[in-house]
Length: 335
Image 1 (cartoon, rainbow, N blue to C red):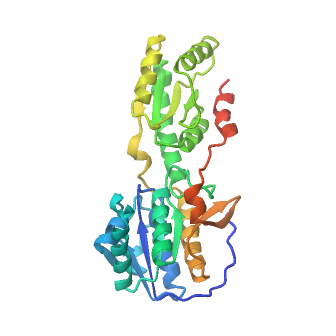
Image 2: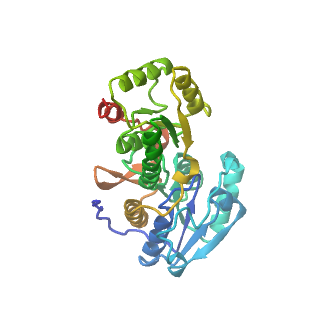
Image 3: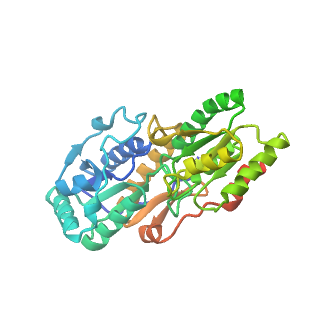
């Protein structure tokens, strides 16, 4: 269970806004629900939902929300507010339009649910226009500094684990290697946790370099010793779109007959796990409490089982590092 901070209300807001931005993640809807209801039950008169993220903020696609409007969304994947990329938000004149749209509706503060790009936008909006903002870490990648967990990560891992458990049946039946590609362009958090949970023979992540030839030799040696019988190699997609296919080609050149399975966007969707529903609900409620306690320009995250506040400046400037010891467990347990 999460340890909840004891915050005393010091400010009053007549209206607050919520937006979800960037890649969707399961758990965003429970977060939206908790923010709406926590705010309305704490004296905030109006809660507005911004549709399609920062794009909707610029185009004034903003709707009034009620407790009833978030009924029966806690079990739904994706985001009822929709999401979109908005590269033009990097233009100060575009942000001026967004700030004016908030002001015209009387929206005094904003809660942003998303990844590093979304939280960067919130920080800049606060710095330039003085709009109080609270960020929530909503991304399947779990790569946000200052928080041990992110909304959607657990569901993405569980989805990948379930898929790989099914793939393993075929791998075992045909005594064949499968390269299973999971999401993670810049981080291997999903791949590492999935690899350990599935008992994968190997895990390939962008954080730690590896040699194709050595990898193939290692696999051959393991199989000659009767080790590594799972037949599963988990590969984070990384920044190279051809990585998994090149690895398969190398393995084939070494006498293997690998098959490729790319899980893709199924990891983003689906009903959020119980863990993600709980996490999102607690973080959403805490976001409102921090806002009413006078906080701004922070992200609400989790550290060592406690809900904590992290300056958005730190979130933007730092990089969350995949623990090498955790990564090594995947290989250690398959020797």
